[in-house]
Image (cartoon, rainbow, N blue to C red; front, side):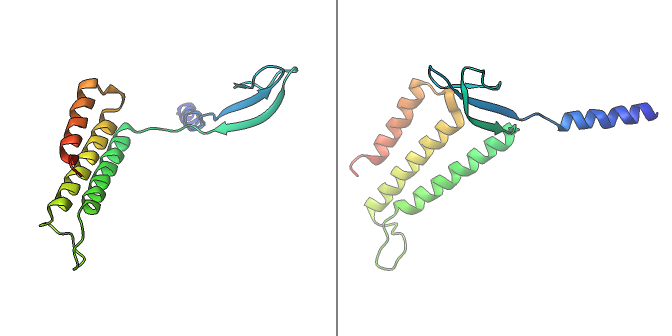
Length: 139
């Protein structure tokens, strides 16, 4: 029983102690090199940087991208309307409505590209650009 308790504590200690990564910037006769080992005798260390590990939660990253896209869309919509003499966005101004549609199309394109990431295709880019061109034509 005591041995399993000690083993559990050791396991937790090693699991929590994830080593940081240290990068050395070395300058010798040739170009500057970056390496994980200290510089050799023929080169001098010009910089040392230690990086802590980053734990990426894909669900949290996706949620953050959705929140940012929604925020950007709201900002674009709110900034797209022209204010009238009373200080509010004029829904009857056709140019203000067009600006809002244009800003919304741009925000939608950005949100879609952020969501898709590097899996974007040429057809997707063409379709998104066409939507933006139609919404922003004549502005």
